[in-house]
Each structure stands twice: as C-alpha cells, then as structure tokens.
Image (cartoon, rainbow, N blue to C red; front, side, top):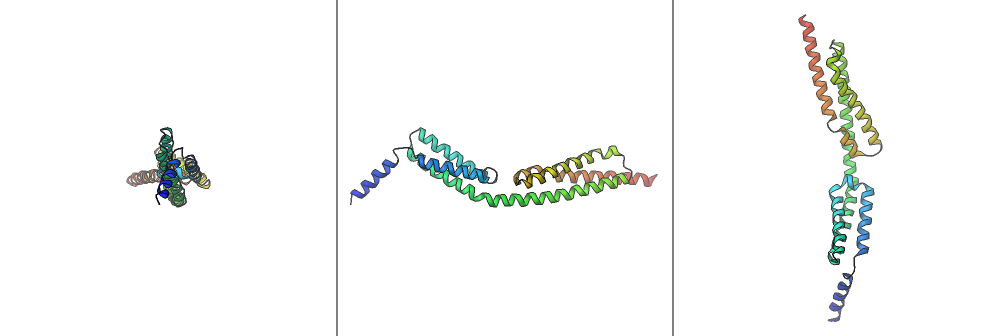
Length: 190
C-alpha cells in the first residue's frame, strides 16, 4: 500500500523537475487564439490577465520554480480561454451600441442641418453660422468614417469615433436656434 503513495510522490516530483514547456505552449496558443478572436478589444481585462500570467510562468521557469511555472501556465491558459469565450457577446454589445449611436448622431446631424437652413432663411449672417457649419461638416465626416469602420466590423473603434460627436452637434443646433430666434426678434422690432 505504501508503494502507491511513494510512486505518486515520485511522479509529482519528476513532473516538477523540468520546465512545463507543454503547458506554457498551450497557454501561448490559447492567448494567440484569444487575440485572433479580438479579446484585446472585447475582453481586455481577461486578455491582459492571461498575458501577464504567462509572463509570470516564464519568469518562474527562469527562477527554476517549475511547480509555480506550471500553476501560472495553467492559469494563463484558462484566462485566455475565458477571454475568448467573452468576445462574441461583448462584440455584439459593442456593435449594437455603435449602430444606435450612429443612428442618433445621424438624426442630430439632420436636425442641425435643418436648423442651419432655417437660420439662413431668417437672415442670420453667414459669419454667425460659421462655427455651426464647421461642426456639421466635421460630424458628417465622422459619420462617414464611422460607417466605414462599422462595415469593417471594428465596432469598438466606431464607438470611439462617435464618442461626443452627437453632443457637439446638439450643442451647435441649440446655439444656432438661439441665434436664429435673436435674429427674428431683431427683425420684428424694426
């Protein structure tokens, strides 16, 4: 009966007497697969955890602490698998958010365009509308770039492009409407 525990102990000690290269390679492969799936963008915390843990495994090998290296390599592989698992749902959420923000921003751009036309028709001098027209032109350019980025399935990048654009456009529309109202008031008093 004692031969079994001693044999098991010898097996464990033998397994830890050399670097866990197979496990490190498996972790590296899992990390590469996670990266290819988009984990750097859509599961960044899990991906970073996997890469950091793999580095710890390599450092443990350098220190000849093979047992710790094995533990880190297994953990790195699991973290990379988890990162890969999270990508599809996170990508879908990012796509939905980008599609929604694109639509809202396009609606705001159309509104600013109509407010600018109304201000022009109300006789507001062109120089007073220059800033809002610049905002409109920039927003149209960003919308086009965001559409191209969405078509390329770079949803997180599209979200980043659109960040704050709608707010700027809405502020320009409010400013322009105020200028237009002021111009109408001046004409009535004349």
